[in-house]
Image (tube, rainbow, N blue to C red; front, top):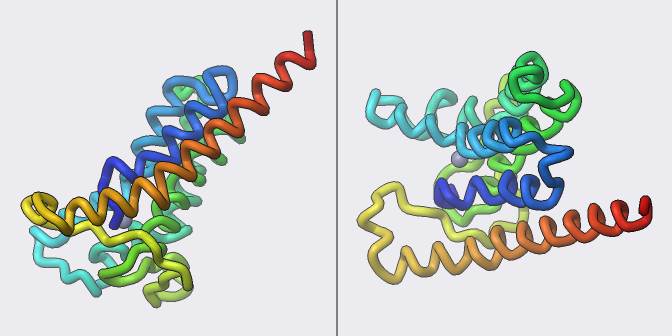
Amino acid sequence: MPTIFTHAAPALAMGVGLGKTVLSRRLFYFAVVCAVLPDLDVVGFRLGVSYGDILGHRGVSHSLALALGMGLFAACISPLLRCRAVAAFLVASFAVVSHIVLDAMTSGGLGVAAFWPLDDTRYFLPWRPIRVSPFDPKAFLGARGLAVLKSELLWVWLPCAAGAFALWLARKAKATSRR
Ligand SMILES: [Zn+2]
């Protein structure tokens, strides 16, 4: 996995790029939670669930079915999130999908069970430039940690910042043309 902070990057980019009028503050926080949520499955390691098990890391929790489920859940609680149901569905689903895609672009571990329950196979994307993050935080203190952070900056944070800036520019241009 990329680090937990980096998984939040696409949701942060959406928040900055779309602004408060499209993305309510509550929906924004919910999106950040959705973007990091799949990695709660690491709790399974402590409970004796093996990595390769479908309930293990990058299994069920990293499926498009979960993305759909979180989108539907967000749509159901959209009044609480102070946004339209469609916006809640799209933003929450996108946040989970971003997590799945980023994990599928990492250089190690097992792939993601993106198509569960139709298919238990673990998949990676053909292009995997993101260095996989170690599970042990101590492993970050050193060259490996630096290499992980460098690859995340280059392949996640930079594109997210560019995307947020492009959305922000488009939003400003639209607001100017209305005046
Ligand atoms: Zn993950």
